[in-house]
Length: 221
Image (tube, rainbow, N blue to C red):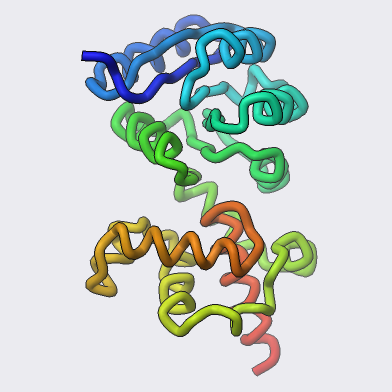
């Protein structure tokens, strides 16, 4: 049976790269279509193998997002997932701005890696909860100015505001649906509308908007 999700793996450390490849190959719905040790390998892999997702080691990028942006410009359907030992807020924000859809810590389990790959292949975004928490805790003027659309939550329907407030707590679509007694499909539909209305590209940026809005309300009260 042909696997549904085509994945490429890029890491300059052969031992770790082999571990990621092995973890993904144990999944029936995931096919590793290529691997490499440099960002140039990633560019070549994107061109020749057309994967749905490319898993890239943050160290291999050497903190440069130019190559990632180039891949996404040439192949907008590809999703980039970065694996990192740790990451600064600035690096995560820079990655999101360049179009990266996932950011996962290397301490995550094989199951978490596979689930993240699946989420990205379905058009979702995912950031390790501990990294997302760092972003949500940063609610100063700089973060507010970066989050386009903050202050415009009044454009959202009451249901959309309710979903956004739960999203800002780091909840998944399934958890939001369970809390509100709505289907996961309905939550996805609402989130699509929320992203469009707030002029943001992913759920993390939307959560930042919500967090900034709450901070401003507290300061005003």
